Length: 303
Image 1 (cartoon, rainbow, N blue to C red):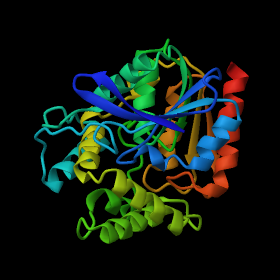
Image 2: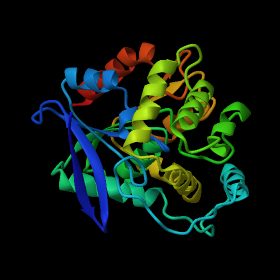
Image 3: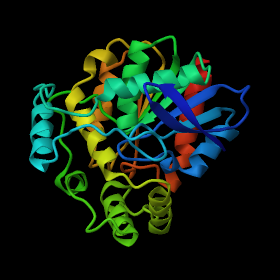
Image 4: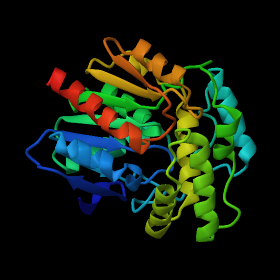
């Protein structure tokens, strides 16, 4: 993979990596809450490259080597809980002061495509990245040829909430900012949100250490969470999506239960939904070959 820091305007820079043959169909990967580009497993990226795609992955704003956003935001956890509860029942959170929302992150992505001179791409988003991808496909239909959504949501009101065990990962933090405590916390989180019996703790530890070495910025994850909560339901955007769409969700996902993926499938006409048995809120190694095949076959079917 080749990497670069790209200036997208408005004093924002995004760290980008690309791999594969530039003449092949471009596939843009958008990662989720608090997750750097390295959290796309190398075997997953390699599988997509081997399947014939030119793959682009990047750090969202506030994460990794991309620009950090220093704006006032509510620090008290109670505000996050209030916003979660309000979004759950369909109430707006627009009056809460937040650093940015998902629409701002959509514009980051669109401007990145401009800078890379990519007019039309296959977009695959995971978790929060899937929310960004849905809005992007609806707002800029000519820029998105095909859409892949993994363990994500449209935040429709009254969908099943995050389960208590997984909710702890959104409301807690490491004991200290020392690397060993950060790594221990990261492993603890993945044990709760990842695929049961398939969390490779050594690999998770390696990735957490790599993430720490690249950039440790917990405020960014908090601001991204608030961006999701401030944006709320994006069902109206799903209803505008006309591109071929595949939705992939883990049967054992307790962070974003599979009913959320089914809600997206119901909202996007002619989409297809795949439930992966025993998969949680991650791309665990045993499931990667099947997911790569689903994504590649979906593209080829509609190319």
